[in-house]
Length: 153
Length: 153
DNA sequence: CTAGCTGCAAAGCTTTTGCATGCCA
DNA sequence: TGGCATGCAAAAGCTTTGCAGCTAG
Image (cartoon, rainbow over all chains, first blue to last red; front, top):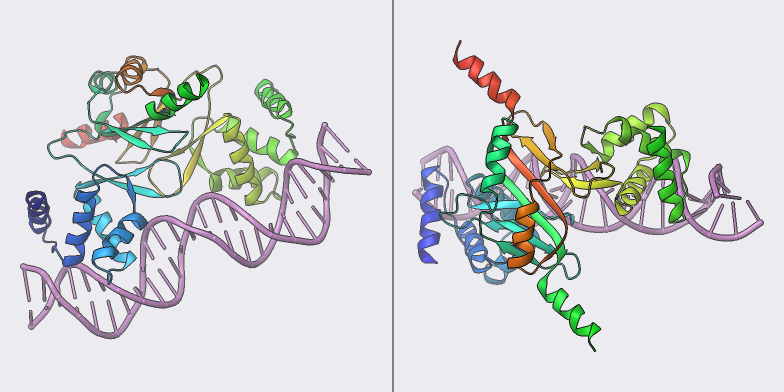
């Protein structure tokens, strides 16, 4: 954890940005909630727990900065808000998501899966891929299990 | 074209919705701009050209209705607006997009590409896929060609 | 020291909603 | 005719911005 904060600090400095207490608090919240897909408001409330004086605008500005630095990815699942997802270190591709249309849960897939598809796209469409977004909408294993249980009652 | 309007009309009626002049005008705009990825505001302005009395709220309500009926898909490319994309008839999957980070153009890929990936996801993650969203961000063939030309000058 | 950062509040956007009126099936 | 649909304007989010004061390096 400390290591990752340190690394992000260096990344900021290398672009002559400062690691202010507010930015550090925000980064820590993101690290502590790596599995979640927090909205700016979510992050704000969590940061506020430990640093009550922080402003929402600062959180937005920090998240924008971290997106620029590719520390986080800004994603959008179709509800009205942007969510921020920490990039896994060393991951050369953005991970994929499984959004459950029953319970709203969001699971992550770290596996690449798109290698072959990207080759086809680059070749057939002469498109130089820099990033991708892949989201599946459907029924998650938990909701599926619940349904099966109910039926067999 | 008329055939498709007719078919959408039937689809509305089958769910006891009416095809009002405003809804028809909106559908026609969508059909005439099938290749584009119009925002609600875009649709509104285009409908207004032929039916100046229409209100923005009606366009929003119509687009929401058409999304429900799966006549269009609501998509989001990360700029602040939702865009609406007509579903190809007979397409059993939602097509993919190539977003150019240089010029902002959006091209479509009709090919399936995800068949194998979906099988893996359904099996390995026990996730029942209902829909997907796949977008690649990168340099389109037009911008790539321009760069190459400039370099060789 | 000082350029960059922050907090607050106000403004800006897109999208939704309330309500009186209108009109399609 | 009756109830759904519309237009307008106001409201409701989420996000950005202006500005005066503050602070990390």
